[in-house]
Picture 1 (tube, one colour):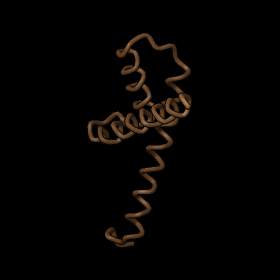
Picture 2 (spheres, helix red, strand yellow):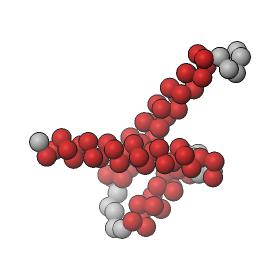
Picture 3 (cartoon, helix red, strand yellow):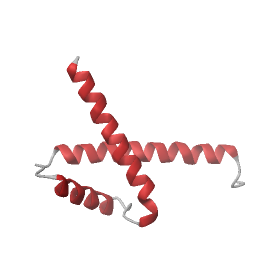
Picture 4 (cartoon, one colour):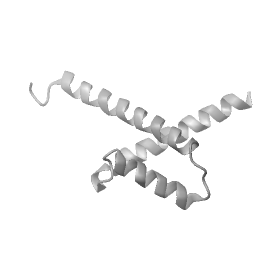
Length: 84
């Protein structure tokens, strides 16, 4: 397949979105299963989570940021639904 093939590019984007969604969901589950003391604990938990999932390299920074943003967005959405 040609690397510039639109179908292949679309499939890569869908795979990346699905991977971010799946990792964000797993991160939220892990966060809820731990007793959290402070921000340092959250950061170290996230770093361990990233190492276990193979996203600890410097070039994976954007992926890690997307996971955090998606998880945060999910928490905000759940909070708004609980307030209703």
